[in-house]
Length: 347
Image (cartoon, rainbow, N blue to C red; front, side, top):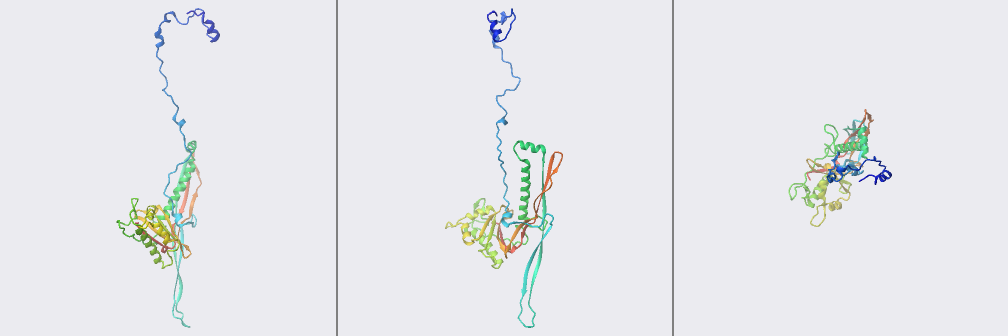
């Protein structure tokens, strides 16, 4: 093939200029068809037909939180502040009015009325936790739309509150600081009745094993104990609070042969009874059942108390990080009238 016929096209349309004696293909290769079978050269990079997977990933902005057992101490007894974080000891005054009479006589001065006062002391307990976070750590969390500092603040508040609730139930070992379950002035726990199915439990392995009448009789036992010990000052129609663990609360669904549940019997016989569940009442010694009168002689029977709910100390700036301490204080449970509570263990 001579270039003369195609030279104008190459020059005008493609801008290709060839020498006058140039040919498109040397004569010896013009009919060598094996030249078209040359192999395609291999890639220098790894074969890839996609994009990075993280470019198609979606991060849900909603935070899924791990739930913990609820704190019920403040709900059951009411939470009050006593003193401040500098207060080490609280003193409670207990007064007993006394007196005796004698036969009357114009010149007789027999008979005497008096008062006896006791001073009950309780200690406070301060406890703390710390958080720390780095500049790079916070920025990296922010890239994921995560408020890292806020989450640490939440964790610290929950940690302190969780320990406070523990002291409201069990106090602090080695101190004059007790909880609602181990105050030494509480009356001795009564034993539950032996059930027809064996043992004393209401519920065993998630199955109600006691009859409705057996469960109702256990509750009436502690009601009778409360009424008897207070010589009728507390009556079954008064405002009462029954505290038990959620596992035992299931037993209140048991029904008798007439289709009447334990809950129905309680509502009919104790119209002002309030039932509260508390996971901490499932103790290593057995499930605890406590019956509290809500008022005694016009005052509260018990409170849980703190002297410092949450104190945020000054954040400390380090080279490229921050640290901060947080403090709380507790008095545990202050049982003012232990005579106004009855309890049973092992249900």
